[in-house]
Image 1 (cartoon, rainbow, N blue to C red):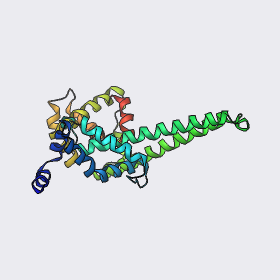
Image 2: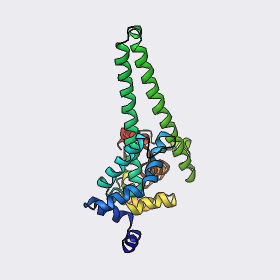
Image 3: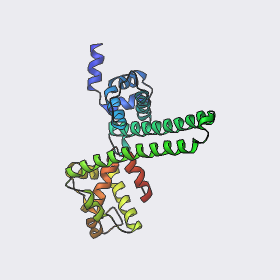
Image 4: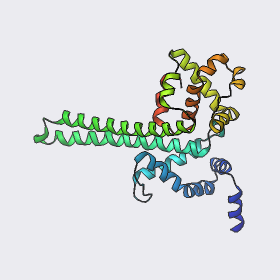
Length: 245
């Protein structure tokens, strides 16, 4: 038993994930147990309240998402397992919240149609539910943006700078996105951005079809994109899909 514990202590997280993916149920169950605090914290970050693993349905969603992350994770994706798992958890919990809001809306409408006194109000109720859903998403989006602003400060960047530095033409933005994706997927290039806060322009010039001058002009914008790709930004990543992400 003691030997087994020491073996677990010496096993890296990536090795645990690999073992679980290969069918080691003991390794999988150990991870699901060991990382319950991490799961609860990740779910709490979405719900913005304390999550009780024994009572809150959202925790069960997070647990299932963590298990899914184990199965689908690949170190080739360019992020650590925990960063990947946090993103999967947040996406699943947000989807759960959205579905619950829709279900409540439909249930309320069904009830109202069976209540003669409320027959004249179903559209008002529907509008109110939709307004609540939009306000909830707007709140989560605002929280995510505030979190991103805080991270930008660590790299001596600001939203205003990004607005000024953002390429004005769509093809230029798409080109910057492709450069950011290349940087993110290359561990060596990514670490220079994440750890040192600088864009490795000399290394990139020979790997992309973009001039050095253009890379320098879009440096801040590309760094910001890499930070988004490397972070747990559900809404910002959805937004970036519209510009070639």
